[in-house]
Length: 86
Image (tube, rainbow, N blue to C red; front, side, top):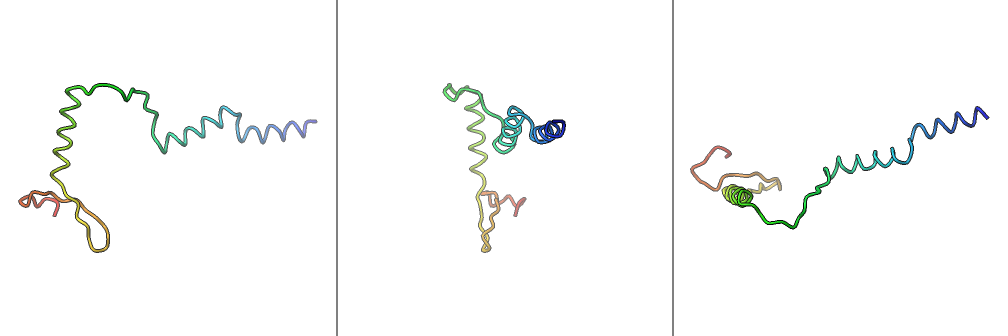
């Protein structure tokens, strides 16, 4: 009887109980997908968010993506006077 109970403890202890396995599995998912977002998706944009969005859109418009013959890409400024990234 002692041999069977020790073997049972060895296999259960290595895997853990169901809740521990669940937490390990969801922990791996959180590492891949990030934490869950619990905020509502249906809400009005605040003025601060509108301004931030406008700034981000303006910033993204000043760059263009250039593709090399080998298929790789890089980003350069659309401003021909800006040679910082060329």
